[in-house]
Length: 128
Image 1: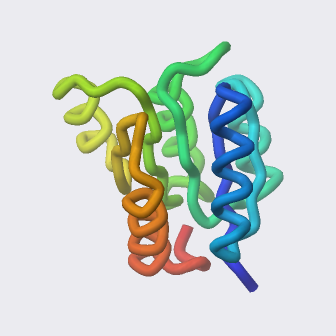
Image 2 (image 1 turned 30 degrees about the vertical axis):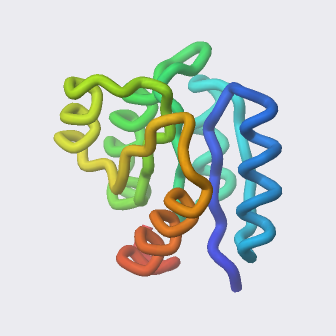
């Protein structure tokens, strides 16, 4: 069974591009476009990896991340921030929280796909 990736992103064009590219790599995908619905969708989908934007309507990505970590079923799920926010403070906060990666938009597709492969290999589909 292929790994499932949940995309939490509010830019519709980017969501569609991510879905197409990740499916072409053999991954299953699902997505949600706001921080409020994100937690429920994670519980429904039980993804192997989450790609999480920081700037989301309703609840920002850092808040979503922290709430996920409070749930024992999701405390080890790998989460990669995918964001336009490039400050050192944001990157340090993500690292401190335990993010599996931090990708700044715009990004190189090859780099993102490699990171996804590497994170999934490190965590394994059943370790999340």
